[in-house]
Length: 521
Image 1 (tube, rainbow, N blue to C red):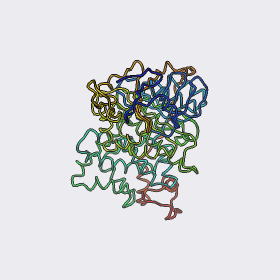
Image 2: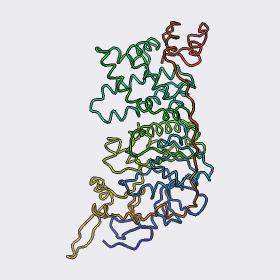
Image 3: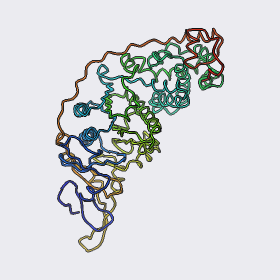
Image 4: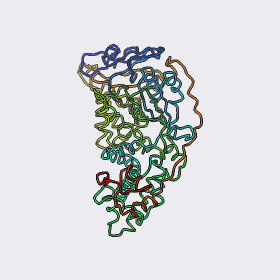
């Protein structure tokens, strides 16, 4: 198989259906934008398809991208770091997972120089982290009257807490009961806590201090018959062997909440919000999520954050006349399959494009995606128009990539026409890492192999990383479950109330409350 000289792209010219795309074909694709790397700004940004370090042709369309590469294949240096530089030059928002803090070190200076609002959720060094309260937005949605939406958000949050246990067991019976009971407790907490009390520490402490069937029965007296909280509590309290069942269920909930019970500093950075997630699509915002990759303790927080931000941005997009965010938001998710499953991920990648959001998913292999997302892996994969392959030892993936490239015809030394893969499984394993050699499928173009520069070989303007100062942790106002339930029971009001009404129950006279002020969640 004759190989032409490299310009930026390796290609083979022949008249058969299966062939390599040449450099001019790729450059002339209407979805690509040429960027002067040495400049200050650019009109579009996206994954680099062709680059020599001074100039780059990037996919500026609304296309999602899937990058395959085993550990050490330079996914971050060839794609992650250049991508963030391009985002900053174009003024687009981004959310990036950054296990080692390398993305922040390499790009935060440029991002800061462009006037971005920069947020760092640093779960490796909690003292260096900004604050995010995962219950703040659901609480605000709930008390704005949109209780159905709030319940879905709370479901998502609890789902990320329960996911690690579900993935480790074949019988999720008690985990599912625990999930239901945690939702009942969380709904009661959301309804009765003040804005200063609403945080995961208070919720975890609320359950941890009251993990008995007696406490659950007391709470049952304070919620309306037929409400979500009541139904979920009865699922446990009406069991034949209440004490034993409740103990098993409570232990599952305790495992879900354990990170909040044993990590006080973690609870503190999750007890307040130093930024509004709804603004990410309104003004250019950079969010770095630094989570240790050597242990999975905090990985569920990535899932929870990504899901909540996505829901908030969808909500904000719906307010716009064209149903799109004013500022495009890019999700750059390194080690995508090493974090707990993101609920509804297949639907997210399907709907994101029309809302001005893009996903860049970096994975080690196809089997990893199937194990994590099951049948939804095919939908996620199918919604990514850009596929990038660096290296793998996973035979099924290698075979699929080879088959997608197709077969080409050639004449052998006996004059017979035969066929062979455009690129074989063996050849795929020998792409040159030191030369930045990658195979790319872009849209409906023929496949092509290109050499991409390492981040150090790009001619981006150099900036020092932003120096961050130790932050003072917010103080937590404690939530008092006992006094709350005593107040409700003493006034013979077996309901949970909206915040305005409940304040009267807890702190003042309830005699003037109207019947229609009460709801029964």
